[in-house]
Image 1: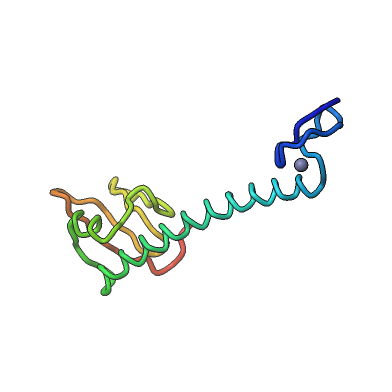
Image 2: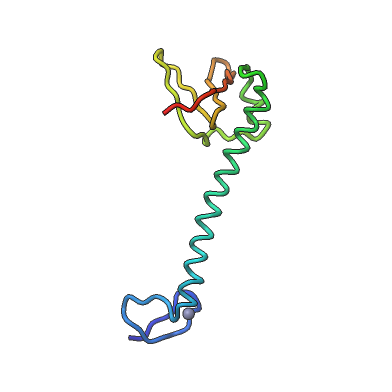
Length: 119
Ligand SMILES: [Zn+2]
């Protein structure tokens, strides 16, 4: 069966389920896929690390109160966090590793720091 290699676009003869003309083309293609996955993870790790640093800088004492504009101005990305902690009275804390925040009224946030890992 005549096929076209997905990597080098050369035609080759092979079984219907064969996608690449050679092991070299197959491994080149796999490496590209792996690289994309690694970059994806790396980019998100960088965002999380930056978010944590912003929270740490604004909260040197372990507790602080800041306005949303200050977080956004520093490049904080609210969609990236590592875990959520819900208190008994219904407050939701968002954590980026050990640094967390709780939304207050009027665009303000309470910043906290958690000392120990919680399941
Ligand atoms: Zn090829």
